[in-house]
Structure formats: structure tokens, C-alpha cells
Length: 372
Image (cartoon, rainbow, N blue to C red):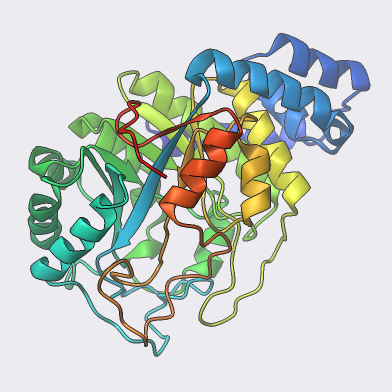
């Protein structure tokens, strides 16, 4: 069964769970015993669980150490293009915004590759705006060919593709994909996406499945927190990750927890999410899905990101720019997709993680020996 149909079932389940009385004993049971039942996950996301964050943190730490050890994988994004044909009211790339639009030439891609590789990173995430005309699969393949000599792992965050196109990019050297559903509530989704192919809720929702069927090694998903009630969005994100783990056991499934950041257009969060609430989401996901990867981006301030190491986070971005190029090729007119809060270099983040007693991973869970 496709996740689109399972999601309808979970919507009905959520309506029941929202009316459930949650006691202190029920919260403690969900923390102490762990469970793979959606009801327990909802209990961990509930207002009643807020008073038990310390107990949740202890349990999440135990599970993270058990399944991932004291490691944090580092990567950085490389923006190839910011052309976009969608009109998403919350996004800086909205086709209606008058921003400087450009895409990298292949020689510029190589400049970026050399600059990023010089930091020691061997994992990279390539991104484009959602414009198949300006960033067709053929262009992405050409960029991957340039990047392959420099990196051991190339993931992508681009517009949803067909299974056939995912297969082509896997053959070219892409081993991971990330695609945020943005909002799992379909009615809210349509109110936020006013025009463009992104209006097709189901085609986007099922893109990770198509990638999994094509043989993608890593699959990342997430909701953009701030666009809708965070508890329901976190619940559906967990159900989606669980579905992918069950159906694609050979793939590494990861969840990102991005909060809406200032961007061109200055769209304000509909349902703001505090740092404490973000922590609750992360802890609940770790307890419910012990083997899922959890990514925290540079949208979050540096002290907060450090606090999350050991509590569930397994992946962190470093040395980040959200402008096209941004590492070696600069465009002063490009404001970037959104504002970032943690602007530290790879070496700085590497040093901090090491000082905390954890191992920064630069290549496939193997330290490349970065000198800092």
C-alpha cells in the first residue's frame, strides 16, 4: 500500500488519539518501555509529556548510543541553482519574488567542489530550485559527474522525480535523496502552494517511495515546522519514516527537523515552534524510531545545536551557505534560500564535537583525520 493511502488511515487514527486521556503513568510507560505503536509516539508528543523531557532525554541518549555510537556525520549543502516555477508562499525561492536567479556552470561546480573538499568533508548535499527547465535531470547528472571525484557520498534535494529518473541519477553516482513534504495536512498544503507542479500533494508525498524502489541508499524526509500544528506534523513525519523503514529495509532513513526561518518575502510562521518543542519532537522520534537518522541544520543557533548532540542527532551540516555556489563562487545579489544561524566552519564544528567526546564523521562513518 502506498503511503498516501496509509496517511489517510493515520489521519483517522490521529483524530482518535487527540481525544485520548493521557495520564502520567501512560507517559512513563511510553518512555521506559519503548514501543513501535503510533499511540505511544503520540503520547511522547503530547502536552503531558512536556514535564518528562529529562526522562525522555535519558532514554533517547541510551538509544542513540546503542544504535549510532558517539558519532555525528558532517555534510554541507551545495546550491546548484535557485530557479523555481512554484509559488510557495513561505519560500524565498517563490517564482513571484524578484531575486537574482542563476545556476552554476560545470566549471563553477568544480570550483565549489574543490573548496568544499579542502575542508575534509566527503559528504555533500546538492540542491536546486524546483525548475525542471533550468535544472533538468541531464544537468544534475553532469554536475554529479564533476563532483564524484571529490566526494564519497552525493545526496540531492531537488524537485520530485519519477522512479526512472531516480534510477538514472543513482547510476550517475547519487546515493541519497532528501525531500521535505513541507506539510502533511493536505488541505493546509494546498493553501500554501498557490501555483506550480508542487501543488501535486500525492506526487511529492510518494517521491521517497519511488526513490526507494529505484534503489536509493539513503532517504531523508521532514516537515517544515511552523506551517501547521507541530504535534500533528511530527506525528505524520514519524509515520512516514516508519513506513519507509518497513518497506525499504536496506535504505538508511533520516528525518530532518527544520523550523521556518526568515526568508525573502518575510512569511511568518503560522504555528511557531519553540526550541523546547523542537527538543520534544526529536526525543519522541528517537524513542519511537531508534534506528532513524536525525538531522539538525544550521537554521538553529550554535549553542542549541551543540546541546542536541548525544540526545538523538546523528547528522549536522557545517560550513553552510544557502546561496547558489556560496563556497567559492559568490553572487552578492543572492540572498540565499533562507537565513542561517550557525555560520561556523567545518573545522570549528569538528573541534566542538570532538571536545564534547563525540566523533565527527567525514566519510561513511570513517574519520578522514581532519587537522584542526
